[in-house]
Length: 372
Image 1 (spheres, rainbow, N blue to C red):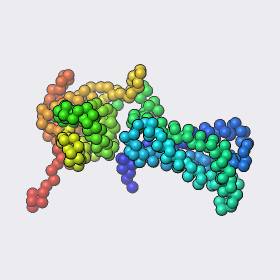
Image 2 (cartoon, helix red, strand yellow):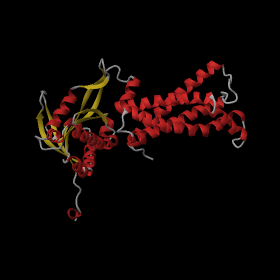
Image 3 (cartoon, rainbow, N blue to C red):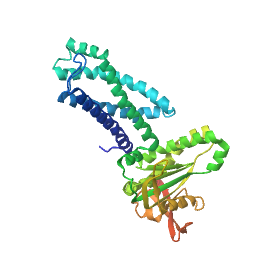
Image 4 (cartoon, one colour):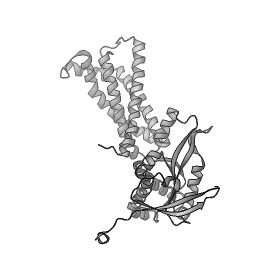
């Protein structure tokens, strides 16, 4: 069974929640084990640490982490996207607290039966649960759960704002030292943005940009692209060569965004009074990637390929094309249902050598009349 790009992205974002819960759970368990020398100081309410109980606790932490990660990524992130950070934390905390209480009521009796061998159906098992719920140990457990939850919510907020891949790169230190890589870039710019901004005013134009970029999200994810930067009404998308050229994903991304905007054309026109279009340039080459900044760290791409891509995109209007690509990227693309038309070798501003540019259109399928 083939996993979709969206599913792969969601899975990669959910797994860290399970890791967070597992690691913090181990830290707490080891600390408690060391402090008590594995003596059960409250046998009436607490469960003694044994190997089976520790394994069960680890599995429970992983499962709860996966549940929280799934809720965050698939549902709550979108549900609370328009809330302030403090409001997100408050509402999510209430939701998860309710979840925790449910999980405790379900899992505590199971852990008790693992320790004592008592059946779940015995009255003693449920009396033990009751004693636990009214004990100081229960409050300590809630505190431990709250710590795990807060770390998870902090991770979720940072991941949402920085981007999951950027966050992983920071944690792994992948670009702590500058590296040279080959990358594909697309500079995508809204048409008539100045006129639209002047007509709508600052607030409505900002809302338009937010809607505009949200519409692009699925096409970018489905083409395995990564958003490098939002610059006003311009977005810079990047691909590693294999992902960007496979099935011409970098080209597919452009036309998928076009399709998504066309589907929302009436909604956008009704809300903002404009038909929204865009133009884009795509190029390929070497860049240097590394962490940079003193007051604020960012992972930055530098190199001629970025300047060249921006200049290619700026020629779209002059060359009467919504999508222009360089000869460098065209050579890497497989044969697909796209047609490429040479615009000749163009001298780009700031470059000594000329670059052959191509406009791209969808290949027209023959009609029944033409095939007869």
